[in-house]
Amino acid sequence: MLVDKYEADNIFAKVPGLTLQLSPELAVIDQVLDDDELFNMMRHDLAQRRPKTRTAGRHSTPVEVILRMLAVRHLFNWSYEGTEQTVSDSLVLRQFCRVYFHAVPDHTTLCKWARLIKPETLKAFNQRIVELAVADKLTRGRKLRMDGMVVETNIHHPTDSSLLADGVRVLGRTLSQARQLLGDQLDLPQRLFRNRTRSAQKAARQIAKGARLGKAVIQAHYRHLLQVAGATVKQVQQVLTAIQTRARQEGRRLIDICQTFLPRLEQVIDQTQRRVLTNQSVPAAEKLVSLFESHTDIIRRGKVNKLTEFGHKVWLGEVEGGFIAQYAILEGNPADDQQWEPTLTQHRDFFGHPPWQASADRGVHSADNEQLARKLGVQRIVLPKPGKKSEARRQHEHQRWFRRGRRFHAGVEGRISVISRKHGLDRCRDKGEKSFHRWVGWGVIANNLTMMAKGQAG
Image: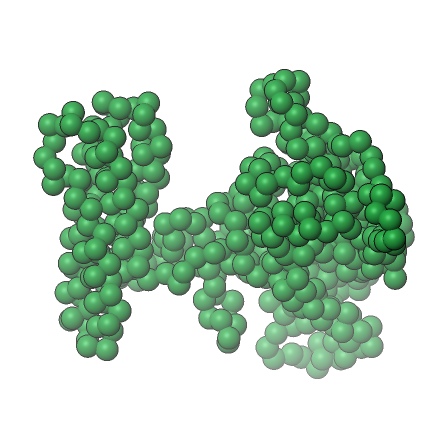
């Protein structure tokens, strides 16, 4: 049964001789998380775990504890294990998380509850925090600066050989498990259960070592690796049919693994044949760069220190006070100038008025975007034009208000740096596309909670 909270207690009063108390910043965040709307958002999602989660079963970890421990995790960029251990060892964090002297939930329990929270809920959660900031007069939404960043998925650098080896390893392990499941009931030849992982890994190593030996040598090793991968695919297809026929209930997990990774390995085989053997240029949208995080996009932004990034592009809209009022996880690698209109429109819908000043980088500039901003009612449009400029344009961008707007806009780079280093938005450590969206949402929420704390406690 879902439990809302433990009975309130003050553990500081029960420790004689100690004068422990929450820091000013943590005290502000504690008050923010007491908001009933924020609590009800979390409770609604957590109540979907089972049909009778609200009314039946043993008592769950309280919703209030889950909410606060997840907030703490992203405020300090800890792992689930680190969050459990640190909260358990700290009287201050026990009080903040409302655990008191009860047992701190295990990290596996916390992880399971966290997966129930919908990405849409976290967006609404973040908007509620911004509403509270507006009510406390920490921001008015008069200035809007926007920029994009890349949050990488937790994958190794993709090469065709490593992807093929990964696919053979996963499916080869599944074949071994299928052999144990089916036991002696088989009339299939034993060769169908051969695990070709060692052959695939050896071929992948030869490709890595043969990079300096010439194209012909590399192609020969790739042909061998493709043969190994193709043989594994054929084996899995036949064994999958046998499992579905003879042990569907017992082998549901193996069926899911095969149905998930089999088409992904086939896609890697296809793209490798096209790129390596026929010298075709495979479009980025048709490439698979990870068998485990298949949603990963290939992103090139022209950054000198990182030409290619693997993850998702995230578009941020920040208002004065350091609050990220909106964020969007983009599909693929769209041009930045396409984000100007939806960001301004969403800002107007949320705050009830257009920003007095809106700014972005050169990649967003266009005559249509400037015209759109004027139509929406933006007074100061800070969009520097790339390339050669006319004399009139140079004079326009040299005006004092424009230069001040550019200096204000530079702060968004600092915001991106902070949330990347402090709140973990440089790389998502959770698995799966929905978990990626949750990771970004919690990172933005952690930033806004921190800015609320600084604004009120400072």
